[in-house]
Length: 363
Image 1 (tube, one colour):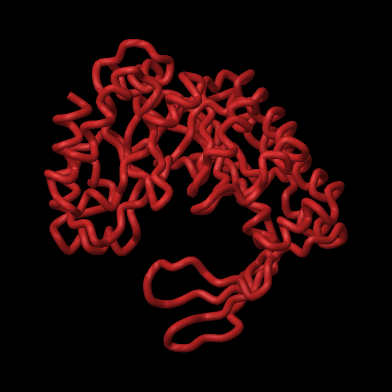
Image 2 (image 1 turned 120 degrees about the horizontal axis):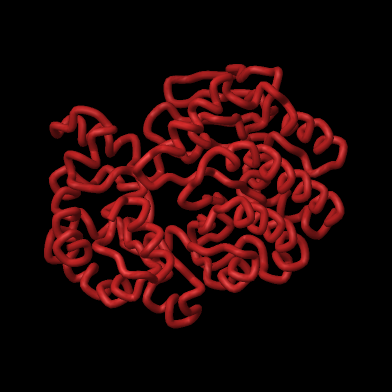
């Protein structure tokens, strides 16, 4: 089977020859370590470790076909700098403090979008899907090459929670749902139309294997937006988008959220999502087998392998992967590490993981 045939068969619960061997990337510090341990370049990781071609490559930028970000006439401006950090006024208006050591998440001192209609009007002007500068000059030629590929590829298909949360902050975005639900829905409506308008020309040229929604709307004890608020405000806009993508020939639609996602899974299935990712094992004990028992074959999954087990060695890896065999055989599930590989994992330890994975699950 080709890579694309294999993926489609697994997610359609049809016979397949073997599992693909994938991961979800690495920390920058991990790459530095692996380069010091003999890796020659990042794009050599699949070949060096024995994995299949990377499914994530190009996804976040829609393969450089179109600019999906907010377009501002401003530029980032350095406000303050020390030996340990820098403070920057970003082109979108946020004030952030970022450390100079390690790849930690920047601290927002001020967010880019205030929870007011006036500021949303300013911000929405930077999210104009009709701006012709969004598309790469040679996007149609690039799209033709992408369409002719052999590897599995997806595209960034939207965000109705994670991006507004990033622009506004968790607290302000959460309060907005209660303080000004009309403005909330204006934002969601604009974003849904934004993603549909931007991707439609591309989907007329490229057949993707699945669509990828980035949301990160849960933490370690549950959702950051309740199921009731989801159904009241978010569901119809997600449904508009998933129905559009399915109508354009995108067979599977994945939703990505870290954390304990259980309470939102019924909402996501009702909204037309097909695949759950990354099923973080974490302290809340996510288990893809238990999720299948609860939600049946309507729920397809990717992830669910504890990344922290990998450095523990072959015995621990085998003990962790063996229980997944029956679920893999059932279909609709591709195990892979539940987030980026951290720097406490050596290149040789990761090679061991790939070898054991192949022996147990991918043979």
